[in-house]
Length: 340
Length: 292
Image (cartoon, rainbow over all chains, first blue to last red; front, side, top):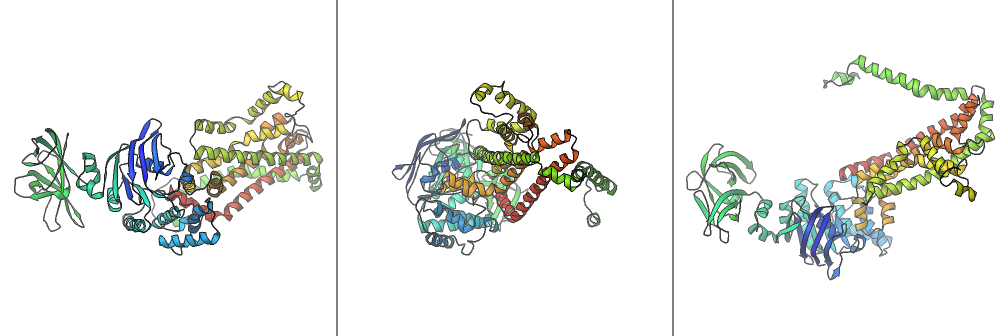
């Protein structure tokens, strides 16, 4: 089911949580709403679900205006950040709940067989008789998903689905959710503040800031071509170097990069740690290594430039670098944004 | 004790044996004087004139009537206040509306007002010289110095008990479960009975038991509005006072023993019910903790 948000607005008391957001989600698409806390992403998700009503604008499910349809009749599957499993019901009863309360009457056997199918889908065969307190966090998350899927929702909505899990479980569940999505082809919208999760999982990433969409696109588009300093910084580690733009080039000390379309004057150079080269001889930006952090896939160097600005860059695992060492940094690529 | 002192632990208050035994001693003495002695006296005095006097007092029509009236008041006031408490707690914790905080304060009023004040207030509203007095008299409706007055006063005094037990728990549980149920297609009633109520049943039971104990023991407000008419508007606590003032100490204590017995049964019932479902309560509390 295709979902369309049209100039949606939501205000809590005097705080404008969502300001005039318009968004199209294609049928069968998996879309991430990515943003820092307070960016309005959860509010948007809850409005799509019908758990909050928008103060302005429209939400369409297909051709139907769903703006005023209550959550009960909206036909969405909602997975809560903290699962919200019913603690007094077994896993099987949790999954069956939606079918039992449905206006569409199903007989006992039909419900049971659907519960068994769903338990198999979420790989929890044999755990139907357990209570939520007796299973792990990752398992609870999968029960929550099975419960949401049991009512054949038109859309699947997930609020920070992996937020409360540890890193390894999170990675596994992410891949697994992607598999389920390709198997069922259900339109899915999920909220996260974790850029890695959004980029890993989504067909399309919608980046929000202060209740507005600042950029949207495929993971490739937003990674390769961030349109603002905010997106650049939010998507990953970034170095900021003060620069001066003259005639389509940005100059910072001894180095310069292309800056087509940026107005002349003060600007900021943004680079990823992997886009910096380190050498002991110039030309480049003179810097002193302050600290070296070892990581499984390489070494992260924290350095300070001559003018006191911090820089982070990555070097190969074999490279010998030590704190106190002096050298020069050059840029392989950079984004230039006016201002600063 | 020796096990603990064998390990090196950071010093705590009460590690000194003299201090510790001193504290425990004080507590024991206080318990003996404040709780045990009065309870024992009730039993001893009730039977001081022998079993026959005790039986006569209990089976006396006035005592019997007082017991019936007390039970009647509880049978009406407790269900009404339970329904009110659930409704109030549900509204306050699961919905946002204008005046929510005000309602929270209103629920507390019976706790902060002295029962005597409540009784006198009813006197001024429903009494002969009161606000509705002439109107009620014109239609020959007796509220004060009659059973309805007793029930209304009992209801006022015990109104907050159930709500007060439920509100903190339901607040801590949040609204996720209800939202999940509604998103799955459950109606408001279905959500309430299938999801909300099962998760608060122990707190609810606790509130009902406290409410019941207070209704049966209420003296202040009821004594103002009942008029103390023996065999007509005397509840058990009022009956005890009356007997005592009539220099029938044995009778007073015999009646008091009934109230004390009700209290003991209340506590036993509460503990038994909690134990019966204790495992599940703990499990639920566990999930609630993790879920929040």
